Each structure stands twice: as structure tokens, then as C-alpha cells.
Length: 221
Image (cartoon, rainbow, N blue to C red):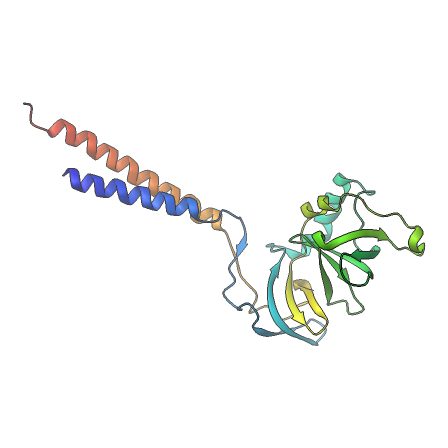
């Protein structure tokens, strides 16, 4: 009897630890469609196709159409002088490579997404590799530079697919993708974690109750 109780308690503990070790990110996406570095082809809403090697998904969200509103709300709290607006033309200086210029498309997973001549392609610029970002609204080098770029890591993310192409790493916003069959599907890990915790609680309570009952059934010496 005592061996059985120990087995039940041990099983409950193992299940509980396994649940705790699982990620608790809400609205996570399972990357089961593409493998890293796999050649992929995206069908765009304008009928074109973009090819490249898969470099992951940036800024996962269940509703990519709300990005503009979420970004505006975030920027209003941070302050207009602390972060550029979507569409602002920026001059970006990097630790390595030539400075680049383009319209701000957004941020995602600690990278800045800069627009190119192709509205479906964004340059992926890691924030920790940037030395200076300044507005370039026709004032050239006289335009003010932004300070404390680390604060931009908290910006709402633009949900996009990262690809490695001939020109380097680019990001394609999912709102520009016409065929989304291969895109990761949303799933709520919070629900699975909660269920796991409830199951563990039931196991522990059951084992404890059985132990108490067993103690009363022991013969008196």
C-alpha cells in the first residue's frame, strides 16, 4: 500500500515539474511548417512571390491587423520625442556596414524593421548593432538623433516572416502574404499549462487523502 502511495506521489511530482518547465507564453506559435534555412516561397497579395531561406517568425501575434493601433498607443506612453512614428524616414547608422535610410515599418523581437523600395520587404536591423538612429525628414544630418534605443525593445511587434535573400535578411509582414496555409497557427499555451497544474493538484490531493486513510487503517500495537 505504501509503495503504491509513493508511486502516485512521485508521478504527481514528475507531472508537476514537467508542467513548470513548459513555456508559459500566451498566443504562442508552433513552428511546425518550415525548418530553419529551408527554401520557401511566399505568395503575396499583389500576385508576386518572394523566395528565400526561412529565418523564423518575428513578432508573433494573433491579430496582425492591430499593429498600427498598438504601436500608436505604445508611442504615446513613451513620448513622441523618444520614438519615431510608423512611416517616419530614418537614417540608421550601424556598428558595421554603411548607414541605411528608409521608412520605419516597426519593431519585432529586438530588431528594427526598415522599409525598402519594395513595400513587402523590410530590412532586419538588430537594435544592439545600431549606433545611431535619427529622423531624416529632409534635414539631413541636422535632424535630431534618438537616445536610449534600448527602450524600443518594448515596442509592439510587427508580425512577419524572416527570410535570408541575396540582399541579406529581410522580413515580410504577414499582412502582405496572400497564401498563409504554411504560416504557424496560433495556440494558447496558457490553457495547457493551467490544465496541467489542475491535474497535478488532483494527483497530489488524492495521494494525500490516501495516505491519511492508510494511517487510520494501520493496526494498533
